[in-house]
Image 1 (cartoon, helix red, strand yellow):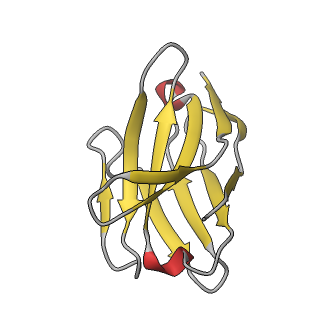
Image 2 (tube, rainbow, N blue to C red):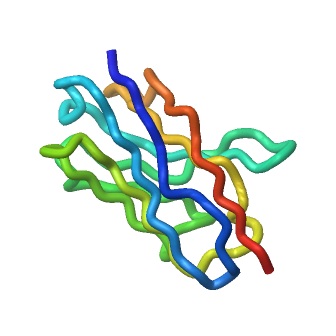
Length: 118
């Protein structure tokens, strides 16, 4: 089993940047694809991006492409989400998840709130 803890959220002005972290427990962290999702109030949870187990391949949602970078440090069991040029519509709870080879989300963190003021 893998436990995930997100951090790094907060209140930021539009145009600013944040780096979110997702710390994972468990020795098998480096085996898995890691993904980020977000959920705005009253909306469904949306895919933001993912990174392969090695870090060599990333996929980003069109809505954030060009403004985000996902990276990972397998030695530290941490995956990062860097968000630049933040917009008010980026306001959401951001979650990280462990994905298996079929893209199924196996484990979730508790989320971290990002609020972007205009």
